[in-house]
Image (cartoon, rainbow, N blue to C red):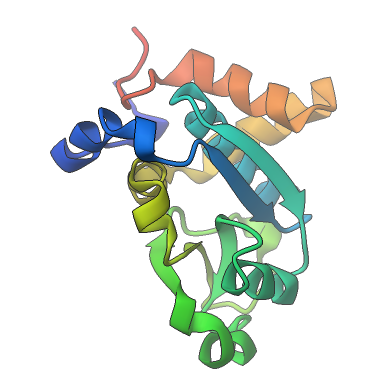
Length: 182
């Protein structure tokens, strides 16, 4: 069966789930304003919510995302375009942040917006590892396909609600630990 989203919580991530009483349950995500960026972020938020987190999502421009993460005013973004678009920010802000890598290759509709070699990466504030290791494990292991984002965007066009679009898509395609629905 084709998998639409992979949420692979490795054994350490599962073990950390039992330690959630000492972990922060509030997660603040930043996102760009492009529909594919909003789909990525709301999908990540829906997965975090399934795991018991309270998620706040806020739109920001790329430079603002770097600044807010660095200053500790947000926890993560799954829409930080690297390497070229973020080049002016990397040297200045990267000392307090971790790059968890790309979760997809970017959608064709975004090609006109971002440099050709860039991909959307997940970047988190470094202190998230101590404050909420379970959230970090979830963000580290999220992956999706471009067609998944297209489906979420289509649901948003029908509902005009990003949270509803992502949550309804997720409910039909995966369980909280990454298994496909039958």
